Image (cartoon, rainbow over all chains, first blue to last red; front, side, top):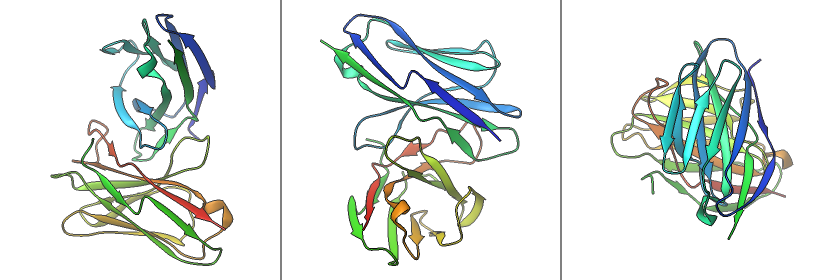
Length: 110
Length: 114
C-alpha cells in the first residue's frame, strides 16, 4: 500500500527564516511526486511534479527536490503570503490514483 | 483562479439523504477526478472520469457514484449519507490521464451531514 508521511505537521517561521518541509513516501514504482499549496477554504494549487531521484524544480522562493525515499520543499526567505498548507502526493506505476499526505501547515510571521 | 468551478459551495444534509455535487471543468479538459478531504487530512481519491467513462476508483463504497457529461462537466452523487461523509469535496480537471498532465482543483463543496 502506498504511503505518504509529511513532517512537520505544523511549522511557524519568522519572515526571512528559511526552512524545509519533508515528504517521505513508500510506493511501488514511482510515476510522479506532486507538491500542492492549499489556502484555507480553497482547493489545492499545483506547484511541482518530480519524476525521478535527483530532480529539482524551483518557483520563486520554493525549491523541490527528490530522492528515492523522500522529497523536500525548501522555502527560502519566506514571506507572510507563503502561509498555507503544503500537500505532497505520489502516483505509483500503473495507477491513476494519487495518494496524498496530511500536509504541513506553514505560518510565516511578519 | 483555475477555471474549475463547483456548486454549491456549502451544503447541509441529514443522515440517510442523498446529495449531488457539481463540477465544471476548465475549458479543453476531458478528465475529471473527485476527492474527499476530511478536516486536517489530505484529499482522498474517490474516482476519475475520462471522456465520460469511469477510469479509476479509490476505496469508496458504491453509494458514491459519478457522471461526466459530453461537455465534460461532472457530478458526484452520494446516497444514504452518513455522518462521516462530512468533508470538503474537491474536483480536479486535467487535459488527460497521464502523470504529466497537471490537475487543476476547484474551490470545493463543503458538506455537513447531521
